[in-house]
Image (cartoon, rainbow, N blue to C red; front, side, top):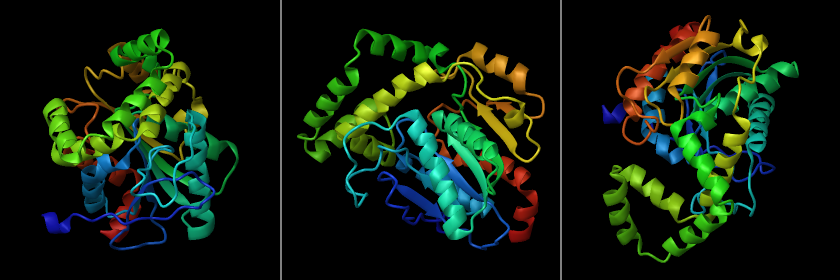
Length: 319
């Protein structure tokens, strides 16, 4: 089985974009008519957390997959260019995805895309759909798949309330945490690995990514500032019928139960308001919001079925 799991390749993007880490899984049977999947991670936006998920999804769907880190989350040892100081906001994240899609259509001829996002990544792709639909672009958005999506009222969730309170009481927390991250860089890597495994209970691959994150001050700052903006911006349902009821773009959302980033009431209201004509599934298998840590393969099996449903004609041609 392991031999059939694809290995990701690098995928250089235009240099006018900020430094971004990419994972590219080409299709084993390229077909000009097939769409590609553009994956948007959650926050923190390191795509290395999703390798197991994306590899399995690639093996199951046979579609080309391009995963791109959120802006501000490209590890220094991977990116050829250093990330400039500062902060990339939620609007920046959306704008950068739109620019990538336009570039792929113009330079590669990739004009059919299926968007997929985890957590805030689902909000990002919904806004990307709005941008592409509103400007009459030639890119066809085949569908969108949101995994544990934080698309409405994230601040009303248990973790959202806590995050809002902490950032309200300690406004400079992102800068303070970034300085603490700088201090962690003085710990020997083996010592940090032992501490992280003991504290987080994460498997070695995820613990390694977490170690990179916690010892990169810019990423820590980016995470908390982006979280602050999420609490302020992601409130009521921001999209009209032109997005929710668009016949050209299929949507599917997978919600968790007792998700600490999505209030139960928020989920139920969204299901009631938008559940007709849009696939909305509530997890009955106990998968956590952070599925990418230990449950990537299981989540990929579920997502692959929705992808195949959305692009059934293309899947039949390449299978």
